Length: 178
Image 1 (tube, rainbow, N blue to C red):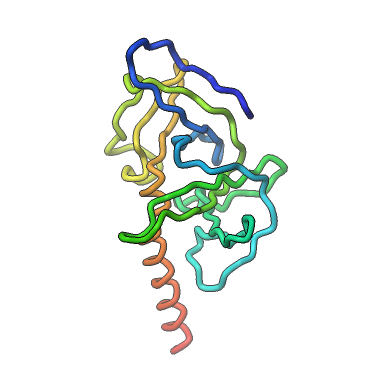
Image 2 (cartoon, helix red, strand yellow):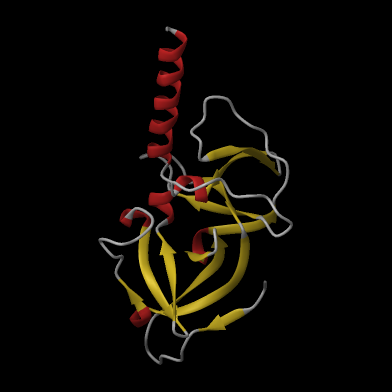
């Protein structure tokens, strides 16, 4: 889990590092500059009236950190918890004017850190992807395989998640009124 893999030797070309992980059998990655730490999956505290993609919160050294299930966020079945399930703690841009915020994301397993040259990254496809195109920063080519590079601030958008939470609360209130 601590290995750094250099995709190709490109002299004079900007290289970025990405943490790769699996989710539902697919390989995804997040730029390492926004990753604070990786922890083993532990018991979460569920919070009522949260969107389905928010599994709950954890106490991380005294701070309450919301934890999102990326699989659910992508419109798939919730991630099954196994012995290799991890939570990646990511620092994201919070709502406009607010400080940066930590958020956890549940993944099947963490793989490795890859160094990918900017010349080996293609733009996000506008069609054919199994997830929203605004969630994809690009597609990295590594040793003949493709890795989806996630746009963390879009996937973990606190504004969008807040809107989903309000929608859940209004639908619950409407159901109670029946």
